[in-house]
Length: 472
Image (cartoon, rainbow, N blue to C red):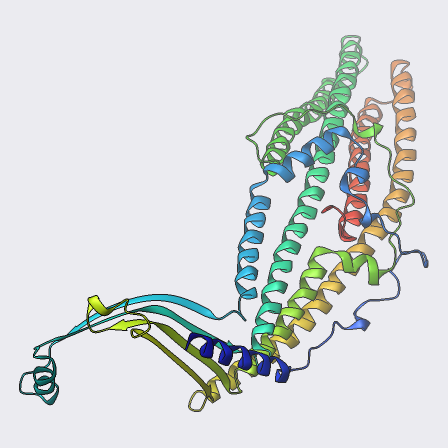
């Protein structure tokens, strides 16, 4: 009997495998979603991109490398993403067993006492001279659904796409963390630079105030000159605790990103010592943008939506289910293991076609098709955002370079103006207001120059991230 059941199951499996077919047609990723080139980028057939670089090859400062290493290892959000990958892997493993028959071991014991006045009770008493009957069964039950319409295959594809999506989510999070750590470190260097500028200007203001006081004692200026000079000095002085506050807050933010408690951060370099990267290649959109984790995630979402359409479409068709069981059965425990007399076996196969709930299933199918259309639009939108971010970074790199050139010239001019105004003021050939104005201008310009350098470094990072760099 057991061999007979096995033969039936094998024949049905081979038959359904032979006739199984796909009931829905997949939608491919739209090829026209990518532009031929990025705006503000020179036309090139070179497909290489800085996004292909590992982050350790893109960032060369050892302080940044150390911080990013810590962030990748300890960042809690990144660790949560890793756990989500583990969950998706378990779900994928489970889906792979969709074609395997479900087997359950069972042991059943039943006791039935029919009414003595019932037909069953009278027959039981006459046949066995008993008022109750016991039944003992032990065996294995099998249940299997034939994948005629590709539903189980679609379930596997959906689970696999979900698993890959969880990996892309983790990659996208890592690219963001790598970019944020490096940007915040450069911001920390900018604050350090601005703090030094404020201290230097405070000394310059203090020297000017002393000169004005000497001129006041000599009757050459009024007390208003001293007051305005003191006010300018206090402006520079106020910047120092403000910048120190911002430095501490920035260090705390870096600590959170790197998964550690707030602490000071080591700086072995200065903002001005960092060289801006040149010849940053972008490649072509169809290859460089496509490797972005968020774009890949959107593409996988379309694959998953295709699979879900296949699942819901297959639910509209009849399903073939095979069940079988076999084992030992006896009225008495003494005869339970009396083989072959106690052996039993059953096999059942049947088709099930939805009737009353067919409207509900068709609604689910229609919803799945609309969700697939949404997945196509989401993919197009993700590409648009990615291309836009690359173009934004390119124009920032280009225009910030021009801004820095003019600002450097302005600082040089103001530095010379400071020297000239101090010399002229000492010799009585310039008004004290000219000195104070020159000092205020140089302070603001030097602070802006440090900020421009930080923005240039940030633009380079944004270009690297927008091209999919940072997860390798």
